[in-house]
Length: 496
Image (cartoon, rainbow, N blue to C red):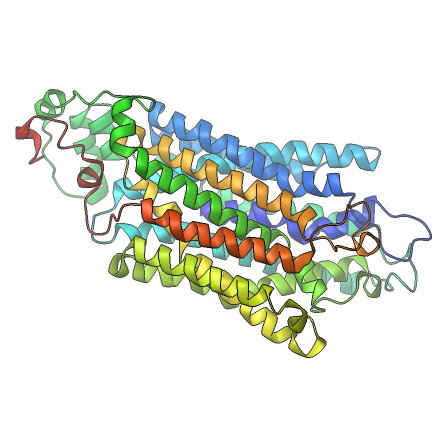
């Protein structure tokens, strides 16, 4: 449920940005509805990602220092409070409202960031080696349902408001098309993100610390045995003397020893996640622009403010239903059969192929009759992102590092991914603009056009395919085999 909430909170903002533009940046007499100025739009879309990056590094490190469980409750409370607060963003003028919104979205992101390394680490430390990949992938796959949940909720809410507060389209009545009640719509959509988080808080506090952390990091085998007896509901004998004997593995994250053993793997997990997220987030946050460009969403002036939320949410929900969600679950069921490496390689290669197939004949795709084909191809890139690197980059870092650095290294890999997301989200806003300055969106410089932007994405996916070769395969091996933790200790500990 943590991941369901994360995805809902991160992606629901893209459903309401057009509406924020209409409510707060309306220009009287303009033929087009108001839209967020470039810098505001970038801030509103991207500030949560910046928060997430910081949260991944901080809570990842804290999870190795204090233990997974203690930190897990903190991140959840932060998410609850900030979801509600971001919906209550206040101020007398647009600038004030946007500033408070960005402030709370940053801290919301900070909490979400903590969920990444901790969820993955907790799941990997509780799982057995045969089905571990599927379990960690299933945690991540809830992201698909989060995106879907956001879309479905926005559809229901905007339909209710649209039916209750009838409004003409923008071209008929520029002022009347945005009813005062529209201000409630975006606030409710943002605040509902707190509901699933509040629901799971109780269970998070009741969950015992992972036995691997207690035994291998906190060196308390008795407590670990007790916790696991509770979870598995069977008697487990503790072997405290063995844990104390074998505790000579003390090299840190910045040591030569770490570099020698895990340097290549860390480079592999950070680079693949970085490259993937550039492609993934630029697609996800700008779906609505791509749909408008191919004529899947009518021109903004032909709709009122609330109906626009409805059409954007509908388009996003369709993509999530047809490609995003199935892709995740394909991975869940196949990851322990095919292995992480094959799935990641396949996913990156297919994304590369589909990106180029969209980019080179781009002018063919934007003809009115062909836009169904475009949407199908576009959905397929999403399907292979999720049945591929989007899930595997999350799974692998939780498996290949030693217990006392596991959550930190996962946090570093994830933060590198979020850096890619920021590059994707901000860079793309500017890159995909029309090459003719007159046709670019208000306030933006001319870009390289959607076609060239898609070519750039294809190249990025190809680089991802190459970087995948650095990542080790962890299918069917125990965490201790993967991280070589048993080799560091005396021979008699091998049997623990």
